[in-house]
Image (tube, rainbow, N blue to C red; front, side):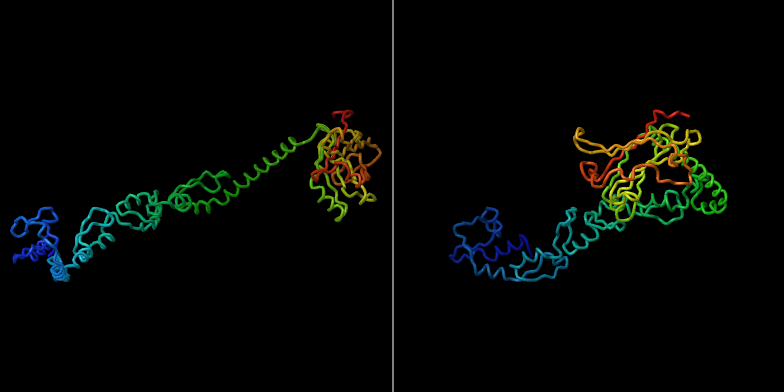
Amino acid sequence: MGGRDVDAWLWSASAVRRENRTTNIKNSPSKIAGVFKCPEDDKPLDYSKLYPDNNLYTEITTSLIRCKHYKDGCKWVDQLGKLQNHNGNCPYESVWCENKCGARLDRRHLSNHMKNECHKRTVLCQYCKREFVEETLQTHQYKCPRFPVQCPNQCETAKIPREEVEVHIQERCPSVSITCAFKEAGCKTKCQRFHLDSHMEENMKRHLSLVWELVRQQQQEIRQLKNALHASTQITNGSYIWKISDYKTKYLEAAYKGAKELTCQPFYTSRNGYKVSASVFLNGYGNSDGKYLSLYFKILPGEYDNILEWPFRLPVTFTLYDQAADPDKRKNIVERFVPDPTRKQFKKPHPDIETLGFGYPKFLTLETLKTRNFIKDDALYIGISVDNKTFIVP
């Protein structure tokens, strides 16, 4: 019993006590609808003569009834007042799917429906382990990066995750055609990967021959590039400014680890001229050790020595630059000498004999060096200039 049947029963059980008493009514459906008629004989009632009967109401609401779904199998039997609460939990009550898929079914079937049947339920992709609405899962799997697919080359490898196909083709697929590893050496063979091992074994001697020829060509190119680089960076005007960086570190090494010689980059006095260089001892050399900066000029074996005039006779100038910010306040230290042709330092140099060179063991005192701006930003500059005006081109 439930719904309108219950309301009608309540009405008929409590209405029309005709023994000169006013009619009793409680929750009549006709009253609720705004038409005050007796539900049994449909006669009009005087609303002003109706009154609530609490005792009768208690009697009715504590009466035992059974669920309206008893024919479907619901075993619930209890007081009428508990009916509404039961209806909210009755397993046979028809309810809408909570996922709003549009399905309406008994509450007892709702859990299984939402877990296994609802097309709007949340499911896990078995390949990438991400969550999706069930009705979109198939569309996802058309592009899922972990979905297993067949190799495009139809190799015998088991299905592989979609995102690994490219790596499989490039590195592992036995059916893909690849070039020989010695392609750069000249081997033009291209075969399937599973044939590559046999190709390598059968052509070992040929590959070694190709590699040797490639090495020979590269060595020749390296020599040519070195010569071109040397020629492009060669100073051939007889002047060179030598920057000595990290002065403090190099000076301490010279002072505490012995007379350490620093040598500048070699340069030519002119095109097709003499090859020369310079060296410096920051803490002095020989008797000048610890007191002076020693500076020397060296003649080195060059490419054109056999066609040059010997001994070396071109004047040489050393310049220690003052780095004062104001050019007008700069006072460079300049020393110039004309070679003495009788000295061995100006004879034609021998590749196997290295000389100290000719110069100034007492070029400048270390005390003077620390004055002015000869050292700035931990660097000093030394200019070496060869006067090649009198040089006769071979």
